[in-house]
Image (cartoon, rainbow, N blue to C red):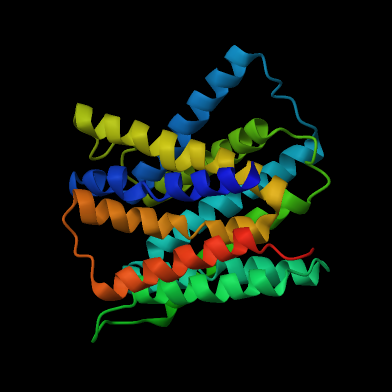
Length: 288
């Protein structure tokens, strides 16, 4: 179940370009997009939980940790988008995929040692990502962009580890965990937008824009976060992070099939390496 959930989390998160690219082309600011992405997700999830009769109640200690998880997940998105202002998106994608390495190192610090097969899978997938998203020659690279991209990876890594290892929220359901994380993220984006100035509905002018916002909220946000929590709890954050390689793979396939973006031989080799590394991890999981 954990492997399936990790695969679904990666693929669903990789559909971001399917909904985000038309919104950006329509002139919707990033913060507005992120606010509706998290806000609509939390509203849909809350209504679904009400219909199912699920309990929203958490203790004060649980709420504080859930809010922290929301901040970590939201900052991962924010840092990544801001890094695009300083470095090419391909390099940013590569640096963000350092998060499996960070997850493994954090787990070692907590005295949970990944197997050599897992380490090999991490190295191979990172190598595949390098082939998929290496920056073009002559690209401008600035230190703030590198710092922001690495901070995005680190935020995501801490999110995965806390979901898996925290005893404080071990009895909190994945639905409740995801809901509070989404609500925190939505509130954070509102505050930043208000601080910057500007309307919360800027650029959202058509039915197609609202449809893309709903799609962005449901598939790469709500579904991804729910399955991410399930996967992390069942198979651990390290293996879940390796399955996250399906995020860029899905994004690349969407770009190629739907937006006419080129698929080079080097990218094909990168995809083969990434898929092979994941299959190797699944077939040879090693001992904990």
